[in-house]
Length: 367
Picture 1 (cartoon, rainbow, N blue to C red):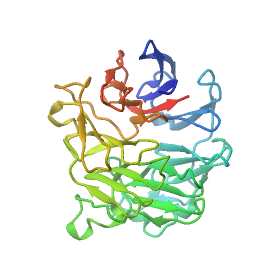
Picture 2: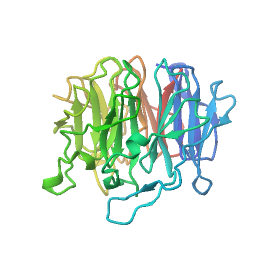
Picture 3: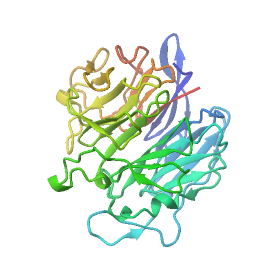
């Protein structure tokens, strides 16, 4: 497992350290502040923390010394005249940053390159480690963007950014609710890549419309980059050809609904999910917290329970709150009730962190 785990919560960023085989809480950062997301850049080791401070707006901080000190960066900003629709027939509204929802590092040959996905549906690029940002107009100006709409939020949002490890000019993003989009020219032009997905919440004649799909989370296998997994609002989808040929996995016990998904870094047929009861309920099936794992590309699943609450568990796991380490053996997930569980054996056995944390938004492994 990696040396540290970064846990982003409603009341701060918590570092987990390994001690005598167990994970324990170490340093804390931004205590009391709402930390939406943290990322450890594998290229230079920098840490980034995105804060959602409500009335005081969104903030982005960077640390070059593993959290010992932080500097404030810029945040993405929309221009005058940029508008966003909500997909419900209301007039477009001025676009303003509601949430910095995703961060991704560029390629090894792109020092300083970062990508940021936001609510209300804009993708931004930085080439100076977050000191300045530019809206990716190629995606913002695609025809039909005004038809995108919010899922759990009032506005559409980009929560997943996958940069191809073979060619960093190839980028895919997943949008709630706007489907999956792909660029092969560093963001200059884009094409829809959600063919094969199905939206059960839409009328039958629109169920397969790629522009209104609600992928909750999309991940790419680093060692086999043509393989993608998506946890969708009403199912699990898998692609073996770079997206756009999505195959629905219809039997995921105990439920096809959830938010989080993680894929093994080298074995594209191994992936993990945290199922729940969907729509207005959103808690574990039968109040039993479990993880579902496939090792054969979705043909079969194992329901992993050892070390997880077997009753009276109402933990929901958000889309960024499940992660696998670079070795493909260590896993961590955190819940809306502040529980954090880790595994050293691909999920066969779990241990609960001996700490009561605030509600968890996201988890990430860090060197």
